[in-house]
Image (cartoon, rainbow, N blue to C red; front, side, top):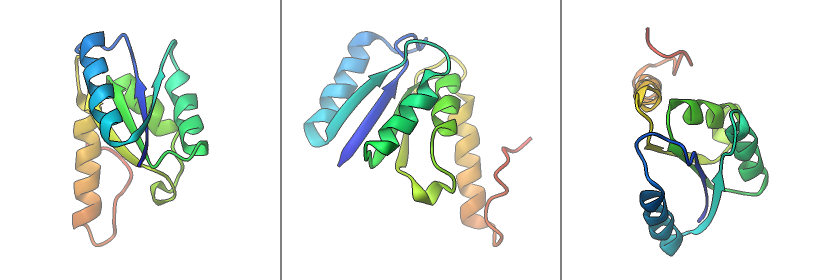
Length: 119
């Protein structure tokens, strides 16, 4: 499986050594490309590049801001793009919880997902 890991090296709850272990583990089982952000907004472009390059999975190792940027770089509707994996590494970790609630809503509602996070 082709997997792109978009990582924020400045995420507050993840060290370089931990990132290296994630890369080694994922790389042992998948064709892995590590893409590290260098400035704000870059994760959006890296996600677009990963999709254009044929990534079947885009994994995000970072905080809420990185997760948000990657989501903005993925195709809509989501069924046209890769699977997304979240490895929360920020201080707040609110984005994964909000995304999980949207997935549950989509799976349990006859009309699907509203696309808006719960208030």
